[in-house]
Image 1 (tube, helix red, strand yellow):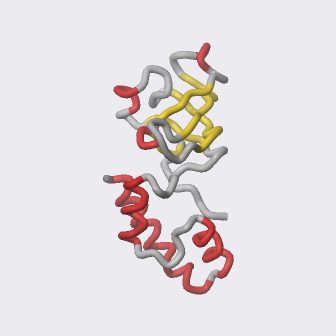
Image 2: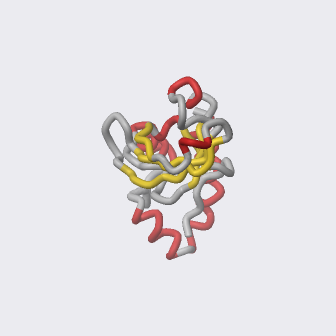
Image 3: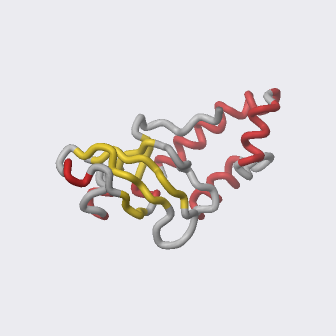
Length: 127
């Protein structure tokens, strides 16, 4: 829930920009969230209808990933290589670096995105 609260803060900060920035509005439209209220966006995120990660994003495991997984944990830096969007696993990641299991680097795994966050702990910027 903390992650959703952080997202809400970022969206509130961006809302003033959205009023005047045509390119920004087009990006929101591409994501299917144009003209939606912040509450609607948060509900869609919770329901998994808006994917928080995109192909190419660099992510790490949240602390709870250490309990859920043995390899794709908080000790690993990963790259999102595929988005499924639905089903039991919704993303595929490739291990870029692992502080404890170097032999697993380069291997891909299907995982649930809810156990992961951006490496730099920020929400991906819309370019």
